[in-house]
Amino acid sequence: MIPYGCITTKAFSGLVAGMAAGQTLTITPAMVGSGCPQTLEEMAALEDLVQPVAAAVSTRPVRQEDAVALTVEYRSDLNGGLKTGFNLSEFGIFAQDGEQEVLILYGTLGEHPQWVEAYTPGGSVDTRRYPCTIPISRDLTVTIHYSAAAFVTAEEADEMLSAHNHAPDAHPELQAVMGGYFEGEQPGQGRPNSLYGNVVFDFGE
Figure 1 (tube, rainbow, N blue to C red):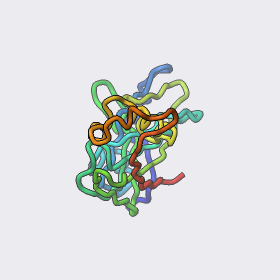
Figure 2 (spheres, rainbow, N blue to C red):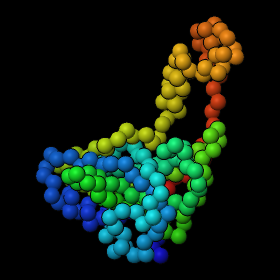
Figure 3 (cartoon, rainbow, N blue to C red):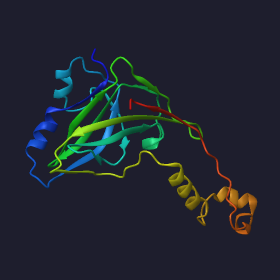
Figure 4 (cartoon, rainbow, N blue to C red):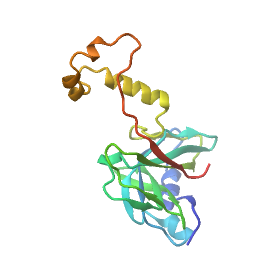
């Protein structure tokens, strides 16, 4: 079995070779799975994950000279919540190639898969992160075809919670029980929140 790491695929090489200066490589949602190839040659030839399980998210690509860096993130609360736990042993980044999506980078955890717990509403969120670097000419632009939903900072989370909690239709069950409590808030007072802990594992640095 091969050790953990990432490799760009043959599809990536073909896609980039056919792009002219100034064109854009559009990255589509990432995936995570439970499979594991046996050789580097098999990895490079993959067109999909060996055993795909769920869609993941990522950070926005950051240019680093002749490469872009981003981090794939999988959270157990995505896609309606993970119903059954699984061994996460592979992940992939896809890109748009005409009307289809192709696998451009494949990552494996080798002999060290990570168990992801099923999501329980109100419980902790199991989070896994995998930093990746994609070698690509500075003549090409890289973008993502979805909202970058990974790495919400504490400040961003606080802003989102504040905006939600002060919306007129927020927490209707508490509004019914507590009557005009929220309407009587003093400036600077915050509404009660329930913050749940996150279990976060980073894949290399």
